[in-house]
Length: 314
Image (tube, rainbow, N blue to C red):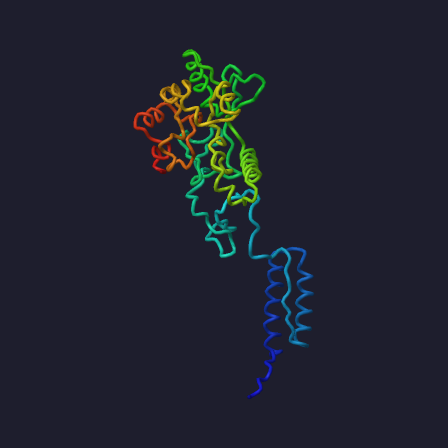
C-alpha cells in the first residue's frame, strides 16, 4: 500500500491571501472615516508579519461587520413568515414560510381611521404584533349593560352597535356586551391559557395536541377582535344556563334568532355562520357579530355569504 504524504499549505500563497484580506479591512476602515483606522493598520502589519512567518490561518473576526443585518424587533416573531433583512429573497437560514398564511392585514390599515370595514382576519390573513391600533372609543354602560366594565370598539362601529342593541331591547330582549376589542398581547395570553387548560384537562397531551383541539380561542394574529370591529353579544340568562360561558346552544335563544335576522340593518353580520365553518375556519358562534357597514352587511345577508366569500378570500 502506498503511503499518502500529508499535504502542506503553501506559506507564500496563504500570506498573499491573508494580506489581501487585511488590506480590504484597512481600506474599508479608511473609507468610513471612523476611529478604527489605526487599529486596522495595526492588524495589517500584524497579519503581514505572522502570515509570512508561519503561513497560519490569519482570518480575524470583525465585530459589527456581520453580513446579516439583525432582524427588526418589530417583526412578527410568532409567525412563520420568512424575514429578509434587506427586503429581498430570504436566505436558507431563515424561518420557512407558513403554508397556511396567505397575507397580512397591515395594508388594510388607515392611520387615524382604523382598518377597512371589510378587512378579513383569520388563519390565512393575519395581524402581527406591530399591526396598527384602531381608533377606539369606550362604550357607555347604556350600550353594554355592564356597569363598571370597560369595553372599547372602533368609533365607526360604536353608534351602530348602540342602535342595534337599543332595537333589541325595544323588542323585549336583554342583550349584554360580552367582549369587544382585544390587544394582540391579550389574545396571545388568552390562547396560551386555553392551551394550558387543555393539557391540564387531558394529562399526557402534548402542546401539538392542544393546538389541534383548541378551536374556541383563536391564535394571536388571527382574531378579528384585535381590529376593533367585532363584538360578542350574549345574555345573563344564557351565561347562567350554559355554565357561565359562551355556548353554541345560544343559537336557539330568541335574542340570537332576532339578531341573526336583523343585524344587517345596522351594519353587522353574523361573522361565523353554522354552514360556513369550512371557509371561516372558526366553529359556529351565534354570539359573534362583525361591523362591515350597512351596504356590505345587507348584501352578505341577502346572498347568504360569509365575509371571506364576500371579499373573494374564501
